[in-house]
Image 1 (spheres, rainbow, N blue to C red):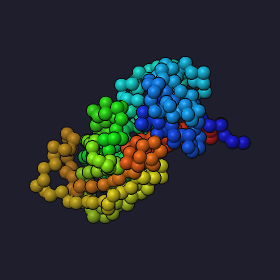
Image 2 (tube, helix red, strand yellow):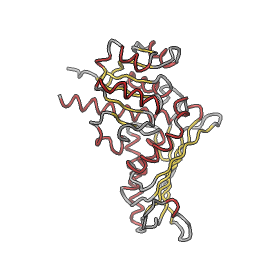
Image 3 (tube, rainbow, N blue to C red):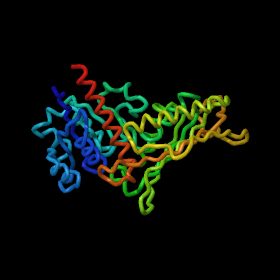
Image 4 (cartoon, rainbow, N blue to C red):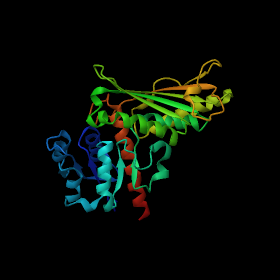
Length: 318
């Protein structure tokens, strides 16, 4: 007998929400669209949902709660903004829904599927950090599990055309949330995040740069770091096929006269010996926006991976 799929709702009919809806409809193993929620009746996402026979409402979270099939929905994705998610989470709290937060609100634990998904499968509200975090934090984790990493810095460059109103409204939250997750999930002692909205025409696909300062005086550790990064890239590519290394991992010695102390957390006593540089490229699957929108694809693919695992775990527990 075919297992019953878990019904999900998506709040936010913009770029991220629409791409996620298409992913669920086109081939999710365990999920079924129960509702698409927006606040603009004329949005492309709601119009597409209607054409695809997905129940819709343009009355936000209140409209979702009032929908006839609301009781059957078990997982709610929030693809709005950090401030809106706080209100949405409060409104949904009495109903026992599992929330997967694709905004930088970070009300629940940070989740990066390739790194720590198994630790948070029972959480009521899981935060997917940011697109830049999903692309780069796995690399920081791959480095820090081999060598102490006093500092990690990431730069995420995305096509301006792929950044919708929600992304643009959350630039400050992006940097803060990603920086915190570099530490709590990636394992660095201190983290910094930068996002660049690239206006180039034609639009360029997502590029990410990761710099880690490590304590790795033993040359043998360098090969272990490279192998760890390459394995992690494969783990992420298993659910984001367009994720790849742009060039070989670079490890360079930090000169003794190069000042790095201002980058380190207060109280750091061991000076880093080497810098690890990793250059990534993320090509989107073009389910909704063109392939240059890798930032969209990695975020929705990560959220989908979490929901699939939650649904599968629930089914296995029966």
